[in-house]
Length: 105
Image 1 (spheres, helix red, strand yellow):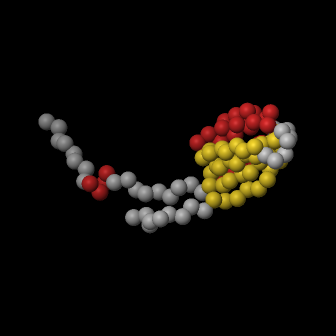
Image 2 (cartoon, rainbow, N blue to C red):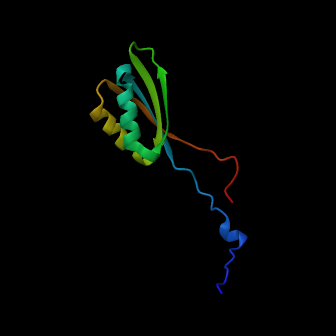
Image 3 (cartoon, rainbow, N blue to C red):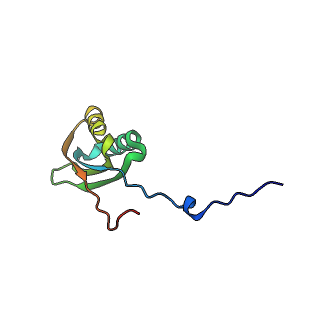
């Protein structure tokens, strides 16, 4: 006869973890290069990508792109894009500060 092992309620609780540190990169790119940019970003970053936001720019034929990735990959992504995509201008890179409404228990 096999003995059944029951776990206590405390051992089944999830341990709260902090979200990863994030970084936002602003880019100005020629509109015809958007498909290539999306492909390069998604394949290079994988799960580190949080979101990509594309907006029309005031410059004719260009789009403004905001990319949010984890902080540890931001520098490498910036270098990768500058090497592989022509007509690309890196605007700014800023760290994202997340504020929790409640403390972790």
